[in-house]
Image (cartoon, rainbow, N blue to C red):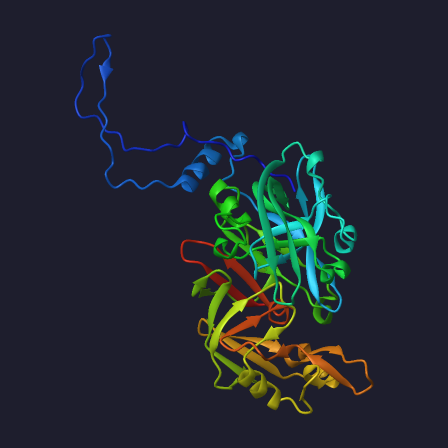
Length: 396
């Protein structure tokens, strides 16, 4: 998209003061001096001042930040979603998995020769005139056992036209799990407290500090195959698309900065409380919903034919894909629903007629509301001084 450069307003909008003549007295030049007084109640508001200037001088086209839209590709069956990110000068494009459950931005270096690295686009720092070496070692590990390691560098990173200088991880080693992944790496959207290397700022930190975002938010629309044929997904940096949801957003306060952690006040089935509560995180980098064992048992007890298989976890009949029942999660005093139809996630493939459930157990104390939740509810990750997540049901 076209981005109009942010104009430095030092001379134009440093301060507007209320000027009033105190007394007129002769000036040595023959004119008159007009002493000014400072308005003690004045509060600086750059955005309002820019609006005044835009109205008075329309040709300036001054923006106090902008928005950047990143279209998404849905990897079937709603396994993960990735978008294209441009890095360096000239730009080298990478398919990255946007992940609110981690904070590092990384992809393979051209110096990486592992099988997993060679299966993906690799970043050649020598071909970027804006690249700056860092040299610090970097490594990361994920909950599924996958790992990557290498060195840090710095370059221009652009998402939907929003560009900032960003510290990036350049992988020189990747575990085999990444070899079959359609994306080249990850784009962490968590807080800087869980960056792998202490002191590194996230993309959102840098974009907010630089003033290039119209709002300090990233909004997420993940389209399911069931409702949208997996089409039209987006991450919207700096803005909120009100056409994507119904009603109004409920802003749920973040309880701990690291992951996007919130309080899950209750779980329910068709509106009836299941008496379950926990801290939880809203995580775009996790496919399923993962709750505590008791909550998983309480949910599946309501779904006829469900079974907790020792080898495959919770299973539901694939016929549940036509169910009209709903499970709910109470967040910020409002219940947000997930259709039981989405719990019939994927056929086990053994002729049993059973499907892997979209809700699994094993996460006592910190539930994970992954893509099965997000593909039914629009989420706005708001990184203000008091961070929160705005949530509303998707417009279908």
